[in-house]
Length: 474
Image 1 (tube, one colour):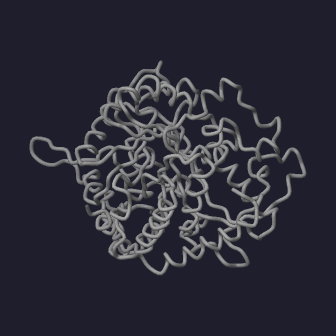
Image 2 (cartoon, rainbow, N blue to C red):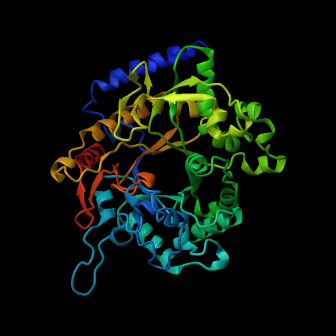
Image 3 (cartoon, one colour):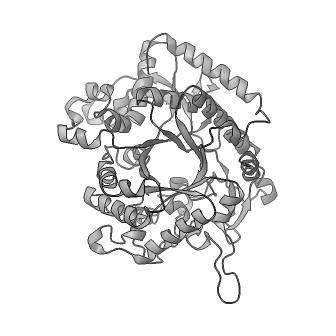
């Protein structure tokens, strides 16, 4: 991002465009407003959805362990059962009657979606975390059946290999896990993601660096891609950042914020080194890539997935005074807020860290396109939540006009980015169904489908799911 006088003009243009979009969604706006090969989907993740945490030969993951530590998750919620997707992804039959009370993949088809994004639980495939502990045939069978069901319903499976639920994290173990996935499922799965949001688990879990995805990519490209003809990429998450003032210091704070959240992961895989802002300030604290490492990591993607939820005002902050206080958040030397002089950057959402700022998605896509050599991009997560409030009657809880407006406006800004030349190939809502939302447990409802947690996890379609169905009518 530039730090010159053009910044204010770009922000003003974005806000004017936001005002135009917010006047209302054109009735003619639909899937046909996008390129013919544009992919519309929705997303999920194994720990948040599957449940059956001790069934089918599955081993214990770090989230199985973490969620059972009292006080770690709101209300001590866990993903032990989650949405019971393991048992409910399709209707099954025995000799006399239909056993399953729901048919989740059928709901995807009913919404006219093109794709379903899901992850493979590491310990459902490798129960002990590594290949030496054996491959779980029941786990392989489950994902084979799920993939087949997704395809049978006319959808593409977009599969994430690592969505925060490992037991082991060594490079070799990850590469072994990835190879089992490529070998067992790659004849039908043509869209792979190595990691989901490395920033989130690195910053939240460790406040330290994360390995780049070269082991799986190199393996896939050399051994499986030539015959399977799929694509492989990485999914990153980033906010958009707006300078709190027109000062050079705040504009530089915006650049640092982008570099530490987005560039930390994309600069190595695109340019072969960490961002200059990080290298210049961190010095020897940030390891340099060797020539061999650059060769392995640079170009290790076919596409980039971008998860976007919010925009923040950003102002410069002084560096830490005490060397013992050095940390990720301190090194950025930036303060962020959803408010400037009491005015929010976008409508405040139920999740307090998020502000409804669709213009920021367009700006993030334009920035990623410029900075990273016009890559193929997918918006792999974008969504809004309401509160899980048992006192609200279900008939009222299903009225989520705010979600309809949210997705319609974000899709309009993606459409503008495409018109500006950004190579965006798809959009995935977060999330398919209300689910376990990590530290918040079951407080936040991000889904297109309502899950009645008080009555046997019964599924109900929200108004937004019917809007999606109409929007995506072929």
